[in-house]
Length: 263
Length: 224
Image (cartoon, rainbow over all chains, first blue to last red):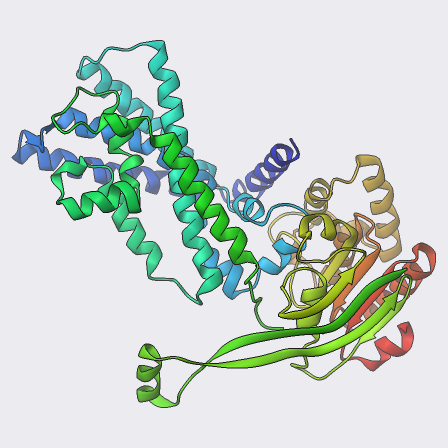
């Protein structure tokens, strides 16, 4: 309860700071959408050259992309901690966080909330609905509940991976190279994983489970394929809990190794 | 009762050795050597409740490192410490409710929003009731003459003004121990005197234990 009210306070402060720079706010929304749009256009171009990708039709791949955008938007809103290492470790702002009575990760997340990213989730939902009707998929109220559960699981997977990634800064001085690398790898999870070779597929499913953020949960709603990914779909929330717990553990353990900066 | 009880406290950092020149940098890339640097070496001291204590030493003597261990930011390498009845790094979230911390070189406040907004946020973080908060804030604002600063964003404050706001921020939850790391650094003589008087008065009236580091011997003379 207390954490919920804290959340609200931080959002209010976010609004106060950000809304003073109005132009900046809209530019961020626009650039977010443009970035997503580019990815979508890439998919459309690929399908101008081939009718199907590893047995997946254009509408299906776009559907997967639409699904992916929803948890990704939620994740980006609450976990925009790209500059964690720079700001909190190198500059030592973690000192301040650690002298306050709330969980350190929670404080860091709240100090960096980025609500405009949520707009991506809405766009993703619209894309999903459009593809849903185009593909003529059946719809039941039950599906909506499952959808929410899968989204939650996917967000937790992202959250866990990036928490772990940020926590690495507690152990090593400057893990600058890893974040862009991760960023590239995560993009593979939005496409049907069976188009990759076995090795990459294994990595995306079990080691850096980005497939659980896009293609696996989305396949639950699609027609069954020959190598059935949708069997794994309901594992998404379980995977989410496991990955997030690991991330959180790494963080809690890492905080104890924090060394501060200078004076 | 002892406010702070420290026994054989030690903190070591392993610091990377940088070899000289470009060839050295290349060697470092593959094989790194580390030095163990002892920042704080087996210190012991006790501070009873209600004391004002000054902690002096040259630059790099380990003052800040000690303060950071006492406030639960850093985990000591070895030794025992107990502050306010807690082991700081173990029950961090409970422990920090009872302490206030001011780092002279670093701001606690949110840069872009009005000072009062930062205070409101801290009120929520420390779970201070609205009535207590108002009462305490009014006292502090009056005592430190902050009236017309409260609505200004922190980035538009002078150093002296900011420092006084930092003090208020660290005291809103009425802590029983206050840690100050070089609170008077860079301040003019008027603000320094004002802050010293304020600390003395608070110590006398509320019995707040104060531990401060400083390079200014007049701080020590006036307070301890």
